[in-house]
Structure formats: structure tokens, C-alpha cells
Image (cartoon, rainbow, N blue to C red):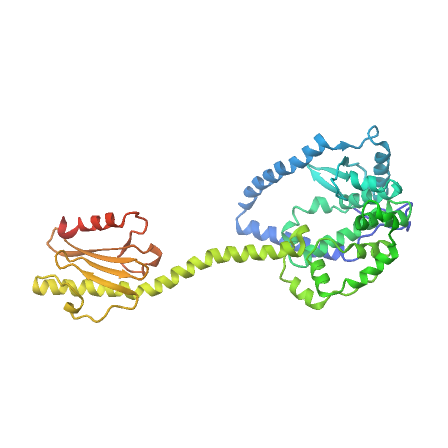
Amino acid sequence: MSDPTLASGPAAAVIGPYRHEKTLFTLIASLSVLFWVLLTLGTLGIIWIYMIFIYLFVLMAHSALISHLKGNAVRITPRQFPELHARIEACCQKVGLERLPEAYLMTGDGMLNAFATRFLRRYYVVLLSDIVDALEDDQEGINFYIGHELGHIARRHVANQWWMGPAMFLPLLGSAYRRAQEYTCDQYGAACCASLASASRAMAVLAAGTQRWKHMDSQAFIEQSAGTGGFWMSLNELTSEYPWLCKRMARLHDPKASTPRRHPLAWFFAMFLPNAGPGGLVFSMLIWVFLIGMLAAIALPAYHDYTQKMASAPAFAYAETLRSASQRHYESTEELASSPAELGLGPAPEGVKEVLMDADNGQIILSLKGDEKIIQMPYVDEDDQIGWNCSTTLAAAIIPKGSSCESVADEKDEEASKDAALGKLFGR
């Protein structure tokens, strides 16, 4: 939609977007389109099957808000709050909206705000009663909030948010685009007011509250923006979707107003903090905490298995050596060995705490650190040849590749597994 031209308003000029909004839109839109194309190609289009279910879930969740509005808020119509309805009609004409959104007045429980949303191709504007009541002495200021929310509709901020969502999470870009939208819509709000003074007072309510705004010095508040260039102020704004109110006030009076440069170090840190929506810096850091925790939950067990596998490898090799030496000893002497020393073997590897060799049935048990075991059990097959069954209480992932050992880690009763192995001794 082209930017509509004002017939009246504080500047009687074209309502234009904030100077960075179009550039940021192009970047984020391009990245979002690239994301969806790559995701479609990478999944052979299957992603859109999942998107149907995601859409249905979001639709049902969003229906709760719309149902709440229709059931509990008061719809603004020519009959119900006719003055507010007339203001909405006039503002729609000024911003170039041909179709009026459904408008509702809802208790804000102390919140000073308004918002716009969309449901099944229908737009909604919600005014919270606290903001309307606060401007009872300057009702023209209510137009500022109406115009601001209509600006989100006219600029298609509401309509585009679903497909541009992936790129909106990007550090710096996502939050910068949202701040640019706020600056733009402030100008839409100002355009709907009869004077800049009314628009200024409307914004003062957000800063000073429902009563004290009447005594607030807007120019002094604008000058307050001189202190926003420090590291912490810069970092918190760079990770926020909303500009500081004192800067919004400054650009409300002059869209090209110069504000302090942000701290260079804040730019550096903000590059690593994703846009977390209204939560700002705290939620951005929580995303990292979540990611680190998730990676740790995956990596730590894998690292533990790796280290355990490396530590257990010599024990498995030693168990194979014991088995081969024990079989050779039996074949040559027809007697079963009772210790590694009897087989002429050196000391066990470091990871082996104890070696037990049963001279009655030939069973070999290696007790490892952590009370894990490797058991070698001989048996005689149908051809009177000696074979071996190897079992271990270690997890299957720990057993070295190529080993014939079987994990019995999932068995609750270790003695039951030993009895099962004994049943195979010499074909029994």
C-alpha cells in the first residue's frame, strides 16, 4: 500500500515510514524468503504439512484472545461509544484504510496501552480503558493510540509477521525492525491528532502515568534522551523491540531528530543476542541459557560415554586375552586356570579392579571401576568345540566396535543374567 497523504494533522505532510524501516524490511523479508525456500527444498516440501498443524494450533490459541474480546470487551460501534467510533473512522480515512477494523474497549487493569491483531483475515484494534480514561482532559490524544495501531495495519506489520518470523529472531536486525515500526507508527498516531501537542501529551501518559502526565515537561523529557548512549542503555535498547520513550518523544516532534550514538561495545555484545521479543535483554540471555543447557544435556552424556568407552577398551582387550589364554591352557592341560598369573599374563589394565577366574566352570569375571563387569563364559557346542559367551553390564554404546560382547545393562537383576550365562556352560 502506498503511503497516504494527510489532509490535516500536525505537519500536513505525507505519512512516511521511519528512515530505516524500508531497508530493514528488505533485509528481513529477503532472509525470510531464503529461509522458507531452503526449508522447503531441504524437506522436499514436507515442512508445509507440519506448518498446517502449526497453523491450526496457533489459530486455536489466538482464538482464545478473540473470543475473550468478543465475550468480555465492549465493541466500539456507532451505538456503543459513538465518539470513539467516529475517531476510528476519521483515523482510518487519514491513514488510507478503506475497511474499518473491529474495535474494542477493554479494561487494562492498570496497563497503559493499545494493540492491533489479526484473526482469519480480519483486523482488530483494542483500546485499554486506562489509556482512554487518562486522556479525558485531552481526548484528541486518544487519536494518537488509534492512529498508532492503525499504522501497524496500514504498513502490514500485523499481516507480515508470520512469514517474516524466522528472520525476526536474528540479533540486531529483528529488534531494529520492530523499533523502526514503532517510530513509523508514532508518526501515524501524530497524523491522526489535531495537533502535535495532543500527540505529545498522549505519549506523556506512557511515561508519567494517568495523572502526572498533565504536569510533565515534554521538552525536558526529550533532553533526557542525551543519557541513552551509555553501554547498558545501548545494550538494553539494541535487544529490545521498543525504543526508549524519551527517544520516541524526540522523534515524534522531529522524525529526523538526532540522538546519541550507541556504545560500540554494546553493538558487539548485541550481535550474539537473538531478538527475544518484548522480553529484551533478559529473555535474550535466557535463550542462551536454554541453548547451553540443551547442548550440555546432549553433549555431557555423549562425552561421558566416550570417556568410558576409551577407559573400558583396554579392559575388553584384556578380557579377550584372558579368554584365549584360558582356552589354550585348558586344551594343553585339560585343567581350568584360576588366575591370570597361572596363564603367564601380566597385571590387569588400570581400569580393572579385580579378575576372578573360576577353576570349576571356567567363568572369567572382570570387575571394573564403577562396579561394572565383563563376563566371559565358556560352553561346549554340538561338535565338542569350546565357545565363549561374553556379556557386560556396561551400556551397548560403551562396547568397542568389533567386540562380540553383549550388553545386559537393561536387565534389573544382574544375578539373573549370570544364571542365564551359567546355563550355557558346556552346553547345559
